[in-house]
Image (cartoon, rainbow, N blue to C red):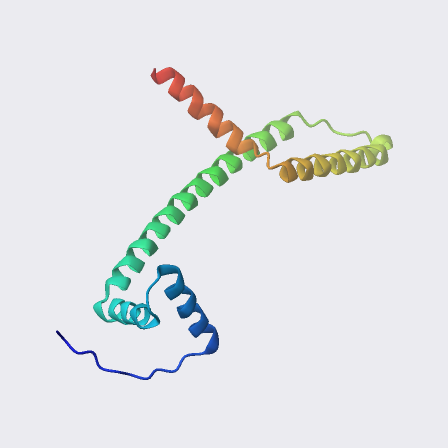
Length: 143
């Protein structure tokens, strides 16, 4: 039987309370909790676990960034197509109707902003809806 050696260690009061709470939850002594923590630190097993968790998170973030990149590309293309179509169909405004056209444009822009804010508040996203629609159509065609 190996005889254990005694060691005095000082902790901040908050940390000591956490150690006591963990020992109580696991129904072990405070010494067992501290010994397990030191053993984990010395053996390096915690580093491996932490590295695996970090790698998993980075992979997930990478996939999310790819999704955002694709969404931005789709949005850019859609906006470019819309702008092109709008510019091609824009009629010149007669000089005597210029002020009324500005007022009407300001009114339409204000309405656009209201609708945009309302959709964003509800969590509605055009791109997500369209991507789901397309994905659903592809799955339907594959079957």
